[in-house]
Image (cartoon, rainbow, N blue to C red):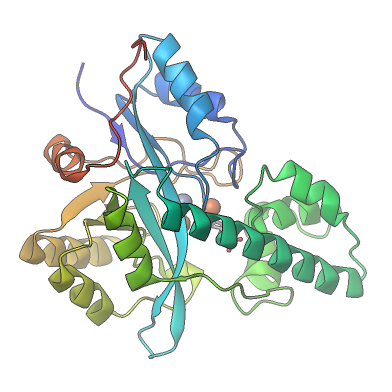
Length: 294
Ligand code: AMP
Ligand code: FE
Ligand code: FE
Ligand code: ZN
């Protein structure tokens, strides 16, 4: 079987629409051989995903991960949101665990503020209902679905156009983790950090390349997500060049969100040698092998 390695996916534990089991099943159907589950700011999907993978010999190898909400230096000098993938870290590490808890509390507070703005505009949604549905890590896609349900917009993507995007009508900021702190915390927990979709222009302002270079020189950053559906080819090559020059791991992934996005699982993939380098670098926890007992 040839390798098919997808290192970035989301479940109902954050803003995906498939349960962790569903994500594993989608991966099996697509012929994925290595799957990372990387919900936003949470590890709550790990146990279920691990159970399914251990019980099914045809499942992919599971890389337990997370996508951490961070803030970095934007190209214009102002702070910008950065997503940092974290792999194979010790989930019991105190500092990182506390930071995850803080980030999720930020999400709840921010979601309620955004719902307040929506209510003032005449779009009433039940905050408690949405938070309950969100599986502990509530995000804008949950609000997008509510707006679709109300008939305000036709699709989740449309909801982001003017209403939910950064700086949009209902947008409210949250206090994310300073990028350097997150990289250090993940390293201290034995994990490998990879900056996600650093050139996803559609989402707004970009992270300054100098910030990436500073982190690369610092030695704690593991890699860059280079092949991503939101990267145009020139930007992917730019990142690939930086990674090569600074010895960073290069990853590729789908950023699968079930039906909250149109991208299928394994739409982009990671080279086996880069995956091997990632596993090599991690000291936190092991990958989970399909059909294995504990
Ligand atoms: P949040 O984590 O609440 O700030 O919301 C960010 C999430 O919204 C991202 O992780 C994506 O899943 C999703 N998202 C961002 N931009 C778009 C878009 N244009 N269309 C659909 N989903 C988006
Ligand atoms: Fe997301
Ligand atoms: Fe992301
Ligand atoms: Zn993601």
